[in-house]
Length: 267
Image (cartoon, rainbow, N blue to C red; front, top):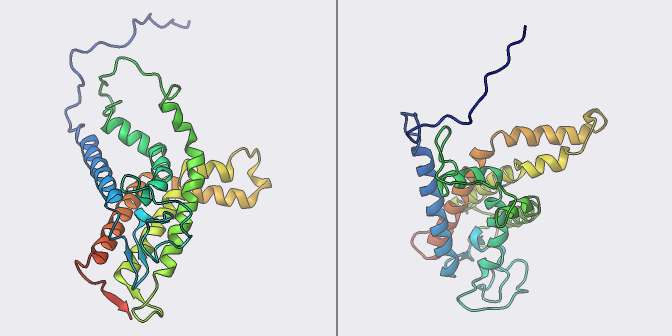
């Protein structure tokens, strides 16, 4: 004889926020500090509008790539200057950063990171959130998270442009071939950026989604399997690429400002 389940009265009511005794608050705190530091640095850097181009070695800071405004210093605009100089309140990075930040902000991992760290929604597993209601991502502005797939295409373009910047950075002091520490850092950065971009859930869906039979599409299945493997490392790639972008930007800024010279490995 099957016993019927006893009636329930809803969630268990606890007098404390959580029964967890570990430092559950530490991961969201670290995430908050790291993301906040990046936002502060990026905001300051975008409005500095200087020290982003090293003409001797063709180093272009990633925060200023591509430099499309008429205010860009000579030599830094590899793709022309189709956009006008709108003054100090609208520096060249503001033409491109919205697309780059849009891709990161709508990323599935970053949603989890800043939802927990900034909105404490929820701050950790088995910890109650302070919000009385939750409407998901069905209303404005969170409904805009659904445009992530379109920002993915912009991210592919930006990654390709940064790859071009890296290729032309193989330049020596005499104009020939050369490799410096900045070149190595830029190579590492574009590798991490490509890995992060291609590990995106939208990329995985693009190459393998809507297929009923993988056996009939061996090439797409191979691409999907590689994207799936990368997707398993999405969090690691998200943080490492974020750090590498900031590190290269800081490095180019210091070299361009004359704080130190670029150590040359070849020429």
